[in-house]
Length: 391
Ligand code: AAL
Image (tube, rainbow, N blue to C red; front, top):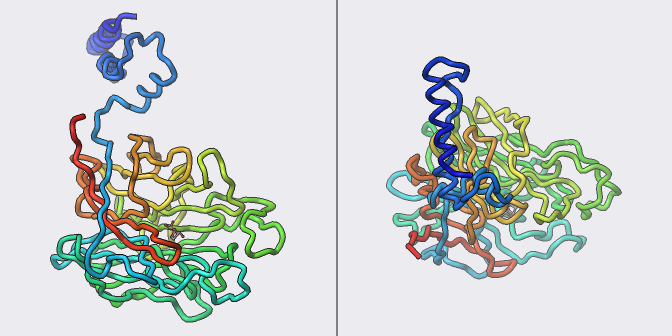
């Protein structure tokens, strides 16, 4: 089939529409011929499935959604330290001429589950608190101190508070983070807490109740509290844990993006059964209502979302069939794949001030991520977007 047919058809429809004939003037007259050429499709009547996907997913769109990264160590207090876990950095915000980041910090060896000692540290992020550091240049960091600690025994956040995100909004500094209530067994439900301050150093005031909880609809099988795989019913995608909360102001509402983990988690061809959801509220402190469209991804791990034009862009790594992709949702909910990437930063702390409507990957210019030296030592390091080079 000759490509010129598509041009002619487009022109014909436009002409008929303009003349007020049977084709309404609003009829789509997209000229696909250039896109066929850009995707190297010579014969649109005989497209392979790969070529159809290239058309559907706009693989001809150019490199603006593609990104690659370099990694470097940090200096100062965030340099790797024996016996210390620093991980899951929040977004980086700017205030008073400094960069600010918040992160999980813990010390002591991980003993794991099933030791019989309910006080023993079960994960690197168990028995953690949330700490704060500042920097002038993003390379050398000063640890300022703890901003949210574990609560007194009996509250929802008494065992560990970790994996924070920060939002600066309306003169407030808002931390959202994961919480675990003692005892930390494998079946323990994980929730999301919130703490608010009027400056980036605190004091941060924690809310008395979590702002988000797992769906209450799975059924465990048996009573082994360290068996998270045996279920009678799995329940929703977030029936076990709500994790990696990330709060954005979008369309004049608060959008709380999060990762769901499911009771009786399975392994599929995409790996761990991990998906993201969003919960929305008119008010900062809630109530947050889970979107009826949840789950809004079928892949990903730690949340990385940023505003782009009128929608929300996302980087999905680690788990699921669509891991290692950048995606975009015009409405913050319905995400489509824009590109496949490699070597993205895990648990990234994005520099919020970099986001730009000009280019979706500006937001990924540099930031912080974490690395394991061992199960007992984890540290925060820096990523930088590699400049594109002609090959
Ligand atoms: C992470 C996050 C959550 C998990 C653990 C600590 O990177 O997905 O925070 O609970 O790993």
